[in-house]
Length: 286
Ligand SMILES: C[S@@+](CC[C@H](N)C(=O)[O-])C[C@H]1O[C@@H](n2cnc3c(N)ncnc32)[C@H](O)[C@@H]1O
Image (tube, rainbow, N blue to C red; front, side, top):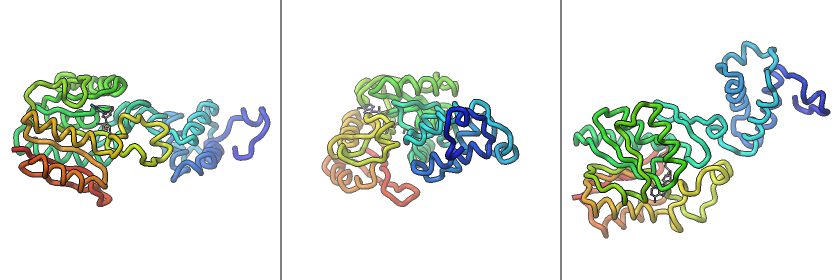
């Protein structure tokens, strides 16, 4: 409880109402919605729905020390998803851990755009660069049972975690994981490449919950930020693959436009995220 002091008092069992009040106070500086997160963590800790807490506010909380540890991790800015080991994305939940990017809602737009191309062009063989938790490949494979995906990553932890998620959804027959820089180790015939690569500039100042916890390899794309995006464009063109769909940073439309004009493509269409920021592009090569 707020203001509790002394060993005995600290160990005293708290009611749900008291525990939430303590947690709300602890989270008030690190979280935008401390009450909401206090409830999420208590529901997770008690393995109950959040509504249970409202109806049983005078019940005492079992193993208060474990709940306190969860709250203290969150108060130190650790992302909710790493603490509970799971992230919700599109229509699924994915296992995540430190070393793997927490999938972001804006990436769902990339999936919808790619889905339209897959449907229209009857595409069955694609590659994903930078699989992370497996978010993009898993959602696409679930939508299109005929689709075969080769998904690469340069880091071991994403490949391990994506492997667990792919197996959990029974998709090992559809998605093959491969350790590779971009598509260097993907010699197979591919019709489309999709990627949400690291695209942030090295000197960009990020919030503590991102920069202190999420993997640098998933965030930073180089000194300027768009270096990997440009390399992906070059590689996909050189391989004669027709389609490329990528997420990018809100300030990268101009440099990417200039770059593709130099490189030469059939067409490029940029798309925005729900907040109205430029967020990615779809290129059709000749
Ligand atoms: C922004 S994360 C995207 C993860 C996941 N696709 C998603 O959208 O949530 C970028 C991923 O690319 C991987 N990566 C970074 N450089 C790479 C490279 N040169 N080749 C392949 N993967 C790379 C990182 O390890 C990371 O998992």
